[in-house]
Amino acid sequence: MVASGVGALARGGRGRQGGWRSPRRGGLARLARRATVVDAALVGDVDDAAAAVAARLAQALDAAGAAAQTLVWSGETTVRLPARPGRGGRARQLALSVARRLAGRSGWTLLVAGSDGVDGSDDAAGAIVDGATWAELAVAGVDGDAALAACDAGTALAAVGAAVVTGPTGVNHADLLVAHVAPRTC
Image 1 (tube, helix red, strand yellow):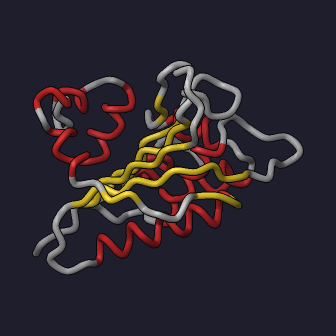
Image 2 (cartoon, one colour):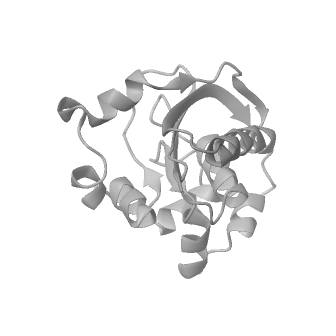
């Protein structure tokens, strides 16, 4: 199941040895060579950016007979914080919003992370989500819509093992989004 692999990858478990191959063995390196860099930088409101990313992923998923592809975006969105925001930052807010928009659709995985290794005020750089993430939130007793409204995507995604923690990188270029899309061929 993709979701268990994504959660395990974020937690440092099976995903590192299972579905994702190390770059030195060529798995990620092959994906990177075939990546499409999306020209439109992600800027402006985080919800608008999430809608654009979700639409592009849905388009790739719906392409009949399409080969698997990797899509890459960069940019920095803005988040309007409520009076008492929760944990997280723009990267996890965007990831959770895409997960809501594509809930239940298989065949995609998305990494959203800050290049500096920091997203908001805690230790996570971002998150990895897929079509099962929204349902995993419900199983964990987390209200995803409430988390988005409270800008508490960090707490929600941590509850399902989707947070990515890298530590500070010393580099701050922009947020990075990498999506792998593998539409069904039948």
